[in-house]
Image (cartoon, rainbow, N blue to C red; front, side, top):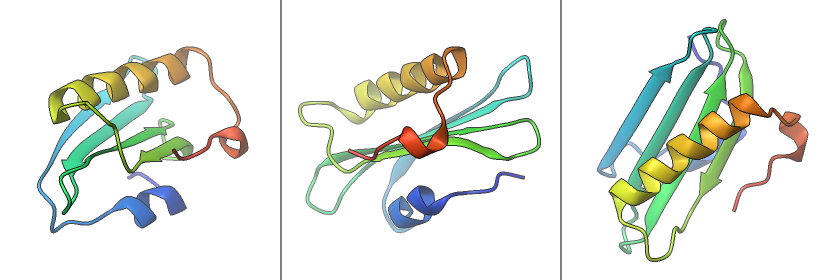
Length: 97
């Protein structure tokens, strides 16, 4: 079970069409990347990284990914999540764009 943070709940809108990428890494860390189109047509992105027990390690929400398709934003988000796992930063220093 993932323990979602404030950024996820502020970003979440189940009425919007979205795509997601879930991945479990060798150490049990999970990556959750979701992309959607806003009601105004902006590509939006959510990135979440959670420890083996579901503890929040990092969440980021991007309300606009200019000039990126949903597929491109999803791929970028997966890379960003994997990069975080390789070089973690304390949760407090992560900012939403």
